[in-house]
Length: 576
Ligand SMILES: [Zn+2]
Image (cartoon, rainbow, N blue to C red; front, side, top):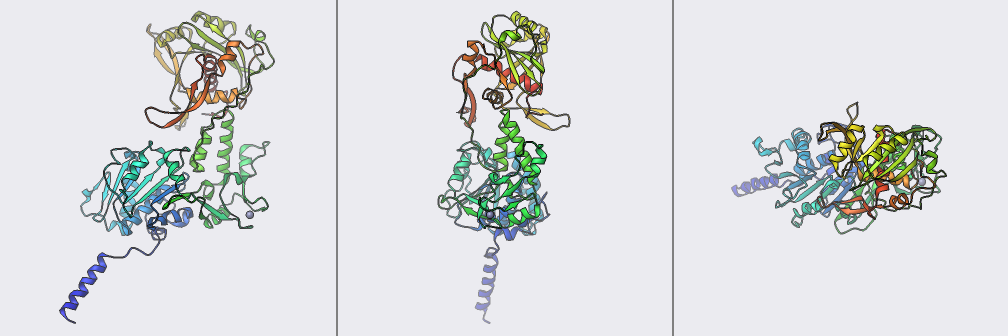
């Protein structure tokens, strides 16, 4: 062998070492049984634990996939998916990569705990870690062969850096425009890849627009009997309709049926059967989409580890809450469990109010209604007068309006409460205007002051330590200018008005008005509608109740009645 040939051979060896071809394994096969994860079902990531992740993960090795939108429900391994994917890229297909989360802090926590665990314990990646530990900084992990940057979804973090890959995590929470900023980091590189992973947000938001550009692949299974290929659809979960049974019994009798009407295949709440179904799943495109734009979607029904009865029980609770105008649980179910975008229902089917067969005079001397539990006097404060309403409530949430009218002075509030036998604590006065004056009037009388708020909810700590969100704040105490203590609380204007609207439109318990309701009441009650508006601060679109006429006093007085009824736990569906 000549010297030249020897030189050539060693040169070729060196070339082979430095230009090792990427693994022939698909990313899901590479990561499975290899990537060491924290808090997983198994110490190493396994594709068998989440078959719906195989095809989305394998797109990492698909050079034609320029933009991938992966809509997935909560609690089905989104975080470990991301970890497995990043591990694959670091080891097998490196390039500058940016990971975007909602805030810097979210990502820092994740990088310092979970991702750090992956990097240190997966031998293929640990070997690539720099000797100099200082190169691993909080918002970036610098390997000799690639950099992994982390940022919250804000303008400063999303500027200037040029990336080969950008991952957006939980993009439904980003402010408008931020997905586009993140996309801009790819600078139209030929080998770029933009990956969005999230639960669903709202119809028409940036996330939804990205999804609409994709080929919208749905995770589907073939019916074991008729072979019809179909997604796990919520409308095909049935068998829980028997209203005579309690919610848990109903939930436990639910099953998934075939979408083919002529087929009688059913899958009950059996983890083995449901697992087999998920293992037979494949993604099927349901749209053509832009070239290179791929979408993946599945919902909670695929996940055999979540018992079907638990999902159905959640749904039944959603329906209970919806009956009293609380649509928040429904929105959450659709966005988080079904991973589908929420569409606000703005249809307004208010019919003309008619009396419920009684006269105001029947109760004008403080007479009680049948099975009365509480009565409230609520007062809307104007510049120089007041509007007052009295409603009596039963424990089942039904109620009857006893009085509505204009009054001129604080003394008349006292007179009304005496005449109608409303205890002082059950008198609620709007304190939004002339707060000092209202506080000074409430304190000696032991009335409660109320403030409508633009906030959507208020945190409340239950005795067991859980924090829940309520549409009203707990009572606070303030000092009046004369040194007395006054009790007050804030209430969420929009949430409370949703509940009032459910009563007004007959979707909640009976909400009676007298046959001789004052004309003022009938003119003022339908004075607001719900509309989509753009928040001037956040630029997000929101749904808010807005005035359609100036005199909305009866609507406000009735809204405060709802607040009081919620505080005394009369309206069901809000057990907090
Ligand atoms: Zn079938």
